[in-house]
Image (cartoon, rainbow, N blue to C red; front, side, top):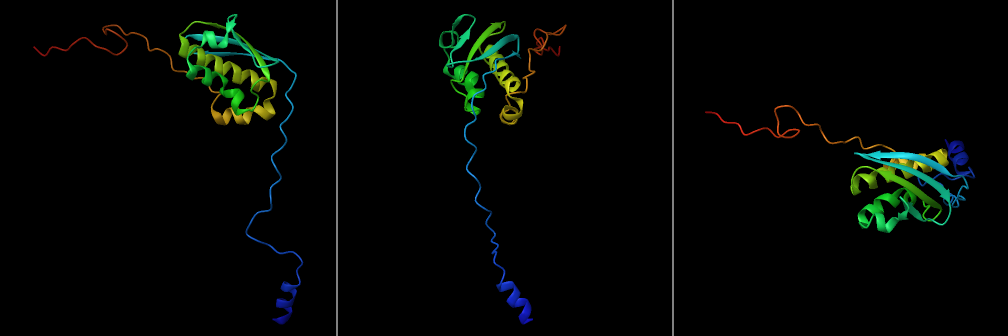
Length: 161
């Protein structure tokens, strides 16, 4: 019994329940100098997006980003893919949008930007974008009007007698 105790005490390594210190997060990776393009859709809106390495300017239908989307919530929604990937200001975005309203266009543009970033560097960008939910298309569209109803679901008033 004494031999076993002595051999345990002589082990040079000591094990603890704490895990070994993890290396610091990888240094920020350099921005790729590859352009990318994609299409994003939401409701009736279609956004054709081109990403070009640059200073971070966003041009929508030939207009400034802030002029086209004055709503701060829409602006934040659109720039979220860059924020999540820490690529703010790395790419110039050129967009052609048609159809839909401001909210649908903003959603379409976000999907287009996320898909373009995924195309540029799928192995690094895809897991982050997927986890944030930016790569899934929002399939909700307006329900069609049915015959005999006033709108999609609104029926005429029911009269019992």
